[in-house]
Length: 231
Image (tube, rainbow, N blue to C red; front, top):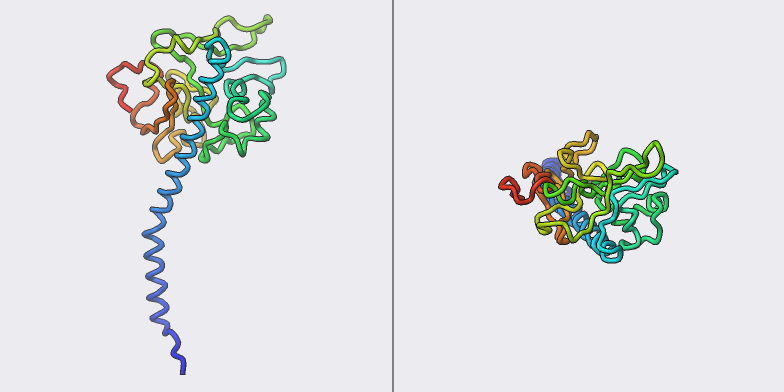
């Protein structure tokens, strides 16, 4: 005669499974989060390498943060300028948008843009690359009277000091990182410190680093030599 499980035995087994699941779920979430951060770091490393390669092919100049076109849907952002260096053959944002599921340009798995606009890839390039030595930017825009506004200038990568300590690009809710308007400043439904209280940044020497949100990473944009810079 076969002996069946009693109700109490089944309840005990179910309770044990529930306890084990409760113990394992936090660990699984941690592993998943670490995997997502690793993927994000890989994407930023490739983007930084693309920027450096672009500079090498363009008289040492950094890609422009943004250059407008007559068609506002075709603005040329920094990530479009380096598209061919990270596996794309077009600088057109529409093309990149269609390919973004497999692109390092939108390579952060935890970036959830609230719009289909191709202007927000989840990563931003620094606005003032060499502050406080110089508060110049390579952001160009159309002047209402015609032509480009004269504020933006092309910036050679060779003039950037303290490359290992100076942020080049990083997690952002916008297409740039702005002095005083770093990632956490942007109003967004998405938390810019997206990796469990940390953000990923690539530096001008090409290395990538995860920095805690309370480390005030933006200070690295303002003055990497300051005593407050402690990633």
